[in-house]
Image: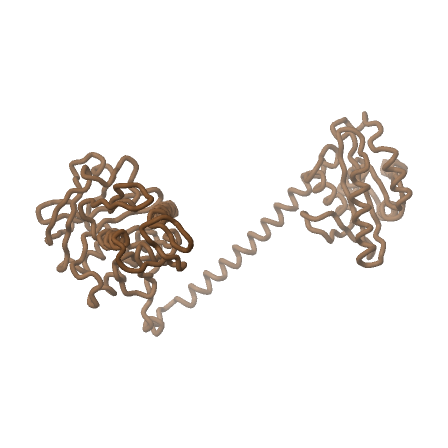
Length: 448
């Protein structure tokens, strides 16, 4: 988990300490710590022209407009607000220190009257204003709800705490949206959690000694644990000496877990394969009516049933092998008769094959003409131009309905090996229109 801390110095390897100006993109972090008072001080310094300020990518920031390599403060603050909104929308946890009564500032080239809470989105129906945030001051804070994970943070500095603001928990919007877990000795709400977008904003009273050596690491550790709890993660660092501990049964349980994972992965692979096989087999009827990918899937399955080995993947043009020779296949379907589209696609593939390897390949166009018409009523399913082109170019064309009939006979085990071999021979040697009706009729008569 990555944590960004803005103007609230924390010591931990997982924490990036920056200001609102120098920080990287806020939306890249799982948890963000913001010191409102410290951030307001940075902005005030820039508006007063104090110091030299650069962004994370080296752009100088000034209280003016964007010019040359200088970035205007107004544009930067608008960007930061958008980044924090995006971080909360991603589910981030935002921890707020230094909350105090609202202060305003004026920025050149920007909206007048921006205030110290401009950065923080609020829950729907809530505004961070004098109706929700009231001025206050004190150093006596007690826990009112022990279930909040951020109590771990407060406990690191509870003897060194101060607050300058309280929530008006008589306000119905605060009552509806705030989960108060810290109160002053007199009952003022000084620590609360709010759900904002998909994330969480947590207000905590501040330690008096921000960044002190005795505190900064303990506070950071507590924030890391609390944010991990709030995000539902196990992200606590394991001390180095834990590796020396031997816990009984861990090795056996680890092996058992790994075995079950392996079995699960094998079962998932088997299930996926079974699903693909079922989908392909159920698609066979699309050879009679289908078009597009559904039709192509049916043809692929049909050629496999005939004994051709596919060497292509589903997303590529179809290529099979039989008896050591390549077979390039194109499918074409139409409501009317099949024209020349399949021819041109196949011709291009055959020419490319010759250019690359100086070897010819066998081609086959499988045509599903008049695909919406019942089989017995179909006429002129493919154009004469396609038949002539196949003869002249040297490849075969076959009606998909005949390929379907062969598949049904194979699956019904009503065709012998010699007949099937004759069908394969025609598909891989005959140029022009390939007809199988004489073989199929003869086989049906023999079967009867």
